[in-house]
Length: 136
Ligand code: T46
Image (cartoon, rainbow, N blue to C red):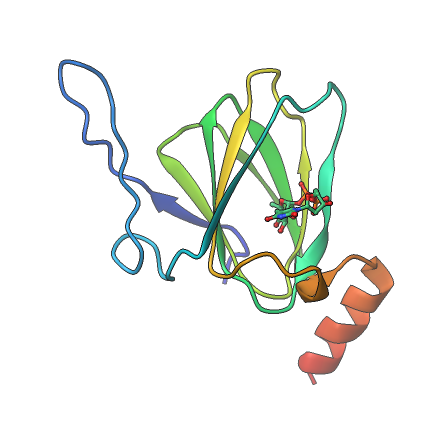
């Protein structure tokens, strides 16, 4: 199974322009408890470099673009988020890095839980240990 799980977010646009609606448990597979967005990223800056123990997220570049690198400890895959209609689902125990932010990038993220620093695995060696142990 591919690490990159993309969702086509349908555009409800009309002659006035475009509109995308995202509804918990209807067009995304979890209930949304938190929304955050990343913008104004400095040129050449990368973000992420962590995994989550128990968190589902949907990431969408509502403006501009950036590249996600996903790693499950065995495979690495890269995907560009370059459309407000392209959503990336990221589940548990997936290392993520975000690179190549365009100047105008606004990365919107919907999350299944409120912020909890204890849910983060920020050390890559610890991440590999956890995924290798859970795969046994
Ligand atoms: C993820 C990727 C895609 C909060 O206080 N509340 C929040 O909801 C978030 C997301 C962050 N923070 C604080 C924690 C740090 O002091 O904001 C600061 C920056 O967060 P962080 O360095 O974790 O940001 P990124 O861009 O590396 O990662 C973020 C999310 O944290 C993460 O869950 O999957 O975006």
